[in-house]
Amino acid sequence: MNKFKSIGLGLVAGLAMTAMTGPLASNAEAGVIAYSTLQISNVRLTSGAEQIGTIQSIDNATSSRASFDGIPGVANSDSSDAALSCVGACGGIGQNDYTRVSLGNPGLHFARGDAILTGSIPTGDASASTVAETQLTSRGGSNAGGEVSSTSFFLTVDFTPPADEVTLEFDAFGELLAESTAADGFAQADFDWSLLLFQVDQNGNPIAFTAFIAPLEINQQVAINGVGSASYSVNDSFVLSVNNLQANARYRLTISHNSDVEAALPVPATMAVLGLGLLGLGVVARRRKQIA
Image 1 (spheres, helix red, strand yellow):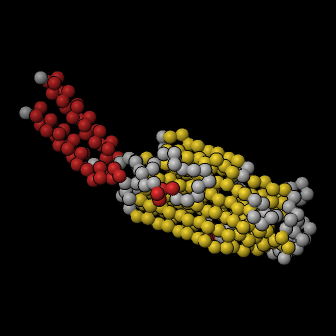
Image 2: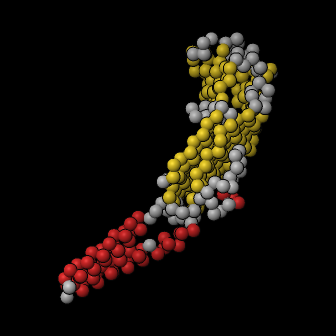
């Protein structure tokens, strides 16, 4: 009698665990998307009414990175154009493509990061673009990022202003998207941009901190937990000014520009419980055989 009772309880437990995974099975086609791009163009640096052309040094760096849980990450860097970093189904994704790849490819399972910096500030044609995107169509986790420097600074310029005011002008286009169709899905996307200005001596050593500027419009984040979506976009021109500089002193302007995403579509814990239930069935069956 006890023998059959044990078998019955094992079967009930196994069926109960299977029933618990029923709703999750419908999430087989569920997914999450996180997308971030920030594109800066037409950068001009002026002092007073004059465009600054007496730049003494320029230090540029770009980097990109991407990774999946269980799949080795990829990271690339270059002084101006980091190679595409992509993990997963990346065959149709091209270098320096800053559009949302997932929009036209709903089945791709990937994470990517890319970055480029072109032009220069003295000529007024500098531009920088970053993108980070991931789309998960099966359970797992990923993160991706495009940042225009391995040191998180993409452009460093030393200059001597002819007047006591410096103005930086540029155009900015950015898009953020976080979307999940799974109850346990998570997606986050952000971009950030900031300017640091230091006074330095003739050897390039910082003497005094002068200014930090981080416009709210290009420092944004969206995130979603569970089923839903969140988005943000900006398309505007910016004029940032710093006053009371010392004429003929030397200054260092450093700009940081980053795009990052993170997403997860976790393996449900009930799958592990189901495995324990089936293991229990195996133990009961083995005991029954031993008793027989």
